[in-house]
Length: 470
Image (cartoon, rainbow, N blue to C red; front, side):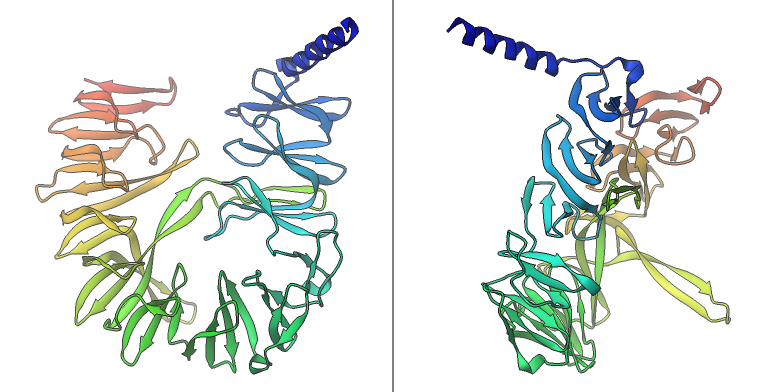
């Protein structure tokens, strides 16, 4: 009995020693100057520590890479395959994947696409930490010439090869095999839907299937190949959230899931995207090699609205088809002259600023957050400490100026004669405000750093200080 107790105590001491093992700081390789994590090397292998040298991952891997800027996941690579650990060192994805692709797209920003050594594809959801097959109840496998097939959990092929396969819905998946379109049932058997022979399956989105027929008609079908809409000569446009902008006769409306969400009363309708942005990478690990970060600098999510006109009047609509406000989004034109001398004029719309009766307001998340009663609103945006910030300079009829965020909350009150960035851009040193003959300084969060009592405020690069001149 004493031997058992002694053994247990010994094991606890060993585990405790592992948990508190320190690596000398001069042996650490931080990912960046701001990183809270570092790698270290022992016996030609790599491990992971925090910035103090506490070991989080023992040195058993060939390579460890930080996966995102927030340092919440790390890629661990051994023998040309990879897995993933979290910031505590816990293994959240097993080391068996030859492809790990995190491609920031407009619509899918929480998914990592994985391919293991059996060429079976799965998806890891960052928000829910869930790992599941993209094509249930079977796995989707890529084979030669970009063709697809279904395999079971043992990697055994259970279907023919296809050009395209949709996700399973109601016990079957829509698929195209050369000139044939039909569905695969739960046994992997393919049944042709002859009315779509020689057509083209060109888009799959959730429960809707998009088919081009005779290059003139465009069918939208549900997951059972039931026709939902038929559009001729592109008299419909794909909006967002499964919404179509559809023309009937001379008027336009919005349609979702075969139901009208607006009446067909508008002369024109255009989709309008309000972008939510943050700083995240586009990352790929392919065939044993880390291709590194290839980032666009931000991730984009859409908060969508629609701009409509009716008998000369202008409206902004939500995705529910409701009128948010009268007015239009502020726009400007850009002119370009091509090599052959033709002038190309393009119209660009500001994302949140709208105009009504020559006054300006602000929209966020399909609601008005600043009413249209200001003489001018100008947007300002940029990155600050790896965060994307949006501010709006607001001017009233008396030419007083303040700054709000995208939610219409005042960061700097509307009481100053002038506001400018101190430095080259928004992420430099804050906002210099002027009231009468004196200036002060706010930071990007609206905190007053220097009171309004200085004749001038400037940045001294030699001393790395902000200097107020009285």
